Image (spheres, rainbow, N blue to C red):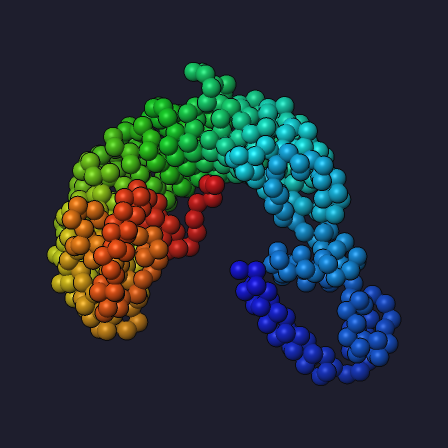
Length: 534
C-alpha cells in the first residue's frame, strides 16, 4: 500500500517538475533569477541553483512536500539527515501509537520530535497492559493543541486521567473511545471542559456498565458544539440522555445494540433537538412510538431501521409522512413481516426525494415496488435481500419503471434468468448489478446479460449457487472471499472440487451471521461515504 502510494507520488512529482521546468525555461533570465531568490529566501547564483542541490529549499517548502507522502515514505525521508528528521517531525499532524505501558518512557522524546500533532490514536492489544493515567496526562501536557483523540483498549485509564486530559486539551473536537474502563465521571469531565467537541463515539465503555443506575452524562459545554453522537454496545447508554437532549446542533445520532427502552428517550430527544439529519437504530428496544417521535424531525434525510422487531408499517408511515426530505432508507425487517408493502407504499407516497433504498428481510411485492419506481423518480440505488416475495415479476417491474436506477443488488431472492433478461432491456442508466445467493440465476444468464449490455458490470456469485446444490444439509454458503465483485465466467461452477465445496459450506455458517454488515459495507461505496462510528 505504501509502495503504491510512493510510486504514484513520485510520478506526480516528476510530472509537476516537468511543468515547473518548462515554465522556468520559458521565463526571461531576470524573472527566473528573481523567482529562485524568492523561493530560497536568499540570493542564489545560477550555478548553485542549476546544480540541483535540494538543501537550498526552505523548511516550509520541504514540509509541504512531505505532506504529499505516505507514512512509509515519510519515515524514509526522516532518515536522510538531521534537518529532514526535524522538518518531518514538525510537519506531522497525525500519529498512531502502540499504547502499551512502556510508551510512557518514550513520550518526552516522541513529542519533542512530533510537536505539531493534532490527531492522535492510542491503541493497545487486549492482552497487554495499556498506558495509564500518568501517561495520558503527560501526552496531554505535550499536545495541548490536540483536536482528535482515539482510544482503543486502554483499560488502565480511569476517570481521574480523563479529567486531567480534558483540562489540558480543551480544544478537542473529536473523541472516539472503545473498550476502555473509565466511566461517567471521566466522560462528564470531557463534555464539561471541551467546549469545541463536535463528534463523540463511544463503544463498550465498561466503566458505566457496572451498577443499576449510572451517573447522567452531560449536557456540559460540549452540548453547544456536538453534531455527531454514536453509542455502541453499551448497557447503560441511556445515561447519555441529558447530553443528547442538550445538543441543540446535533445532526447525526447512531445507536447500536444499546439496552433499555428507547421510546421515551427518543420522545424527549426530538422535543429538544429538531435538526437531526441522520439516524441509525440497530437492535434497539424501540417500537412505533419511537418512530413516531422521530417523525418530528422534518429535516431527516437518512434513516436506518435495523433489526428492531417491534417497528411496523404504522411507524414507518408516520416517518415517511412527516420526513419528506428522506433520501436514504435502510430497513432490516428481520423477517418478522411487520414491515411490508403497506409501509413501503407510504414511503412511495410521501418521499419523492428517495435516492437509496435497502430492504433486508422485507417481503415486498410488485405492488409496492411499482409505486416506489413511479413516485420516487430519483431512486438510484436499490438493494433487495432475503425477500421471499421478490421474483422475476418484481425484477421486471423494476426494469420497466426505475429509469434513474444506477446500481441494483439482489441477494437471497427467488429470481431466475428470466429476471436477468428483463434487466437487459430496462433501467437505461443502470451501471452495476450484483446477484448473490439467488439459486435460479445461472452463470449463463448473467453472461448473457453482460453480453447484451457491454457497459453494465454484472457480478454473480456462482460459487454460492453451486455450494447450495452440492450441500446435502442445505447450508447456503456466503464465502467472504468470493463476495468481492466476482465476475461471471462460464467454468466457475465446474472448477470447484467437492473438498472446496464442503469447506465453503462450513464457512458459510460463519459468514452468514454477517449477512447485514456485509451488505452495508458494499452499499457504503454507493452512498459515497460511511459512518464514522468506530
